[in-house]
Every structure is written in C-alpha cells, then in structure tokens.
Image (spheres, rainbow, N blue to C red):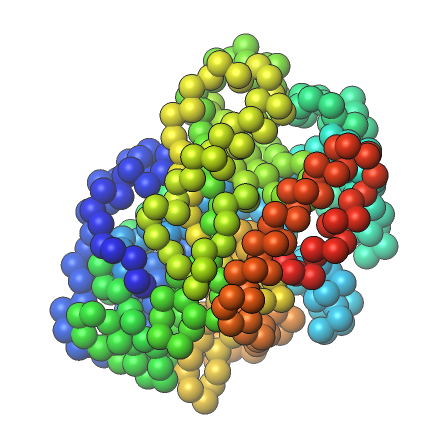
Length: 462
C-alpha cells in the first residue's frame, strides 16, 4: 500500500511497543494464488471480515494481503476508543434513508461495542479493555451550550439517559477533574482498549482458523476478480478493499478517501495520588466540546494517552513515515494536556506517534459489496473505526455469503461518497478547515460565544 517496508514495528507507538509481540512479519504472497475471498489490508476491517467469514463457513478459502505487518496502520496506533460514535449525525443518516434506519444504525453501533469485547474474549485476546464510557467536558460557555444542545437533540431522537446524559459541574468533576469544568456529557457506550493487542490477537485468530495472511505484500491495484501485488496476483470471486487511510496508494483510488493525520502522546505511568486528583476511576475515555478534536484514555498501566487533530493534510494525499511525528503538534498536545490537568506538568512524555486515518468527501463511513463485480469495501471512519470496523466486518461477511440480515439493511450499506476534489482544491479546502477550527476555539475562549468561524469553515470539512 505504498509505504516503504520496515521491520522496526515496535517503535511505531506505545501500543506497538507494549503489545507483547515481536511483530515478525509472516511470509509474503509466494506468487500467483487463487482464493474464494481476497481481502486487502490486515487492519481491523480486514481481520474482522476474515474472522466472521471463517467462523460462518470454514470451507471458504480466505486470503488477506497486507503491505507491512498486521496492525501497522491506524488499527495498531489509534487512541484506543471502542466507542459507538459513527462519523455522521443521525440527521444526515436519516436524510439519506429514514429516521427509523438512522436509529437502527445507532443501535447497531451501541451493540457493536459489546461485540468487540465479547469476540475478543471468545478468541482469547487480552485487549486490556475497560468499558467505563466516555465523558466529554464542557470547559467554556460555548462548549456548555453545545453539550446541552447535544443532549436535547438526543432526547428529540427518543434517546434516554442510558444513551447520553448531561452532567453538571460537580458530577463532571467527580468523573474527570479537569480545569474550568462547567459540565459534561456522558455516554456508557465506550471501552478503553489496547488497540495493538486487539489487532495482533485478531491476526493470530484468523490464521488459527485457516485464513492465509500474507504480510509485506503491498497491493498496487484492485479490480474485479484480481488483486495485483508486488509479489503476484491474488485471484478471487470476491475482493474486499479494507485499506482506509492508505486507499489513495492504490491505482485509481487517489480521490476515494483522503489520509488525515492524528497525533498522540503518552505519559509515563502516573502514581496513584495523581490519579486520585484526575479521576477516570473506571478508565473512562475523555474529550471536550472544542471544535478541533482531542481524545484521551487512562491505560491499564496508568498512563495518560492523549491525542488530537492539528497536523496538516499533505498535498496529493501523500503518506510518509515523517508525517507521523510533528514536533509542533506534539508540543501543542502537551500544552493542552497540562492545561486540562496541571498536576501532570512534571510527568515525562515517553511516547510520541501518529498515523493516517481515512475520510470520505461527505464524512460518512460506508460498507458494501457490488454483486456484479464482486468488489467490496468498507471505510471512511474519520477516526471512529475501532468499533465501526467490527460492524463492517460482520456486515461484509453477510454480504459475501449472500445473507439478507438486519446488518445488510442498515443505511450505511451501499452508500457511495462522491470523490474528493482534485488538487490543489482539496489541499486548500481541508487545511483551511483544520486551521479554521483552531481559530474557532480561540474565538470562543475570547468571547464565550459559539464561533462564527466554525460555521464558515464547516463546509470544507463536512
């Protein structure tokens, strides 16, 4: 999938280093081969799909090709949220389908959080998971306005406090003692996980079930019935694209999804007295209601992992190892973390990393299979893929097997986003939008009112 092959996988992130895995690549594709189902990409999407297919029909010949080693990309180095977040609002999903179908998709996402945990346990994978939910702080008057609006919208959709609820300042601080807290929203539908342990466990699980996993086998082109790789052609009746942020490296796919980088830092393990001041006693994941996304979790070994947007989109959808580490963004993340929790000012930052996530032009994830060509796909998760990939994998398995199920009738199935604009338009638009969200947050800090800038730049990134 375009990136230079490497062998020092443990250096990619905290998760890669602490996955209790030597990351030794499995053998590459040994020349031309035939299969019933070919899957391109051994991240969460590809591996969940392979797992559910192998469970459903052990006689299927399933082959997965991976450019590097399973879990190399976003699946192995994300923020570790297995959440029910879907990268499109209920209203936008309903506009393309119906209110009932939008709610069905939301319900499926909620159920998928538990399915991730159940499937991991069934396969003997210790993902260091804790389902503590997510707390999203409101730390300004404008953020508090958005928090209340979010809960009011949920109630208008018939969703109760078991789905999302509003916390006042005292309740919010009791969960997470950030600075300047006015309140928060809370949902139980999220688990903190160690993503690399999960993705590596899935790779082992599919191989145990007879799936052929060919690593260090970059695919260069996908067409009906064939995956062209550097080591030969993989022929199959069904071909599934599961390449997410690396999709632009495939011939003819440069404008399908764009890679946008998200960067993360991690502290050393923090002592008990520091955690007593911060909170997160159930390992809740956390964020706040600013425009430029931030996210964090308390790890099983008591580190703070904290990430966010802010890195630029690179012209021509380029993906480079150098883009994983941007010192200015790491410094900004650290400053934000200390602003949230001054008690961690002296804590050492032991790990800094990043990676590319995939975004469709309408910011809507999709999954599907063209029965005529046999080409399937899933992706465009906008960074909310840990759980969504599981739903995608189960859905793709049903589609490949020709099943008509509740999953195959969900409204994201068969959705096709339009292509991104050619360069330099997308470079200008995306980076203007990202920069604008930073300005919007500063405007709100200064005025206390919802940002006018956010309304102006929103069309560039939605």
